[in-house]
Image (cartoon, rainbow, N blue to C red; front, side, top):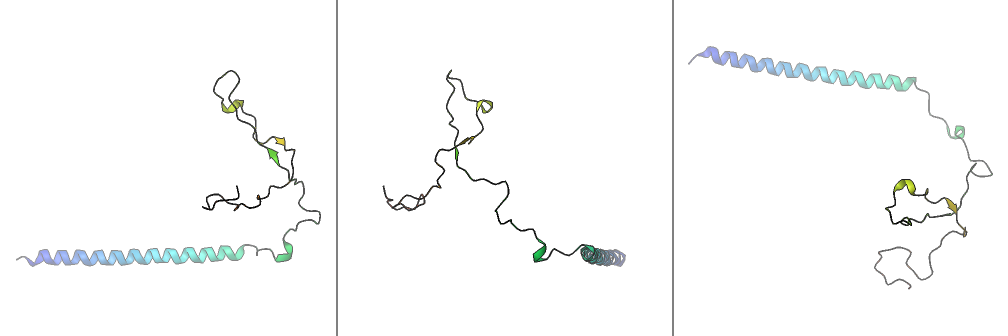
Length: 121
């Protein structure tokens, strides 16, 4: 047997282990540097505002906000029997509804669908 072949193989594996260790040290050093750089950037940023520095809602309520119920736009086929295309539709819910009361649950119903109960009707 030739011992030179075994010595060359052993020397190659040692070089591989040393290369892996050196690469690991480089990657670990890069991560440590990135974390320190991030901490320094964070220190230079201004502090978050305190509780009293945030804007508050005026006493009169939100500005330029209205609540109203809108009527849904009916989607019906055209009178000439052609297929209704999107550019022929009106924008949805464009008209103000006649009844502006908030919808409430009907008495005697569960208030949800798929509950499995008989319901009130």
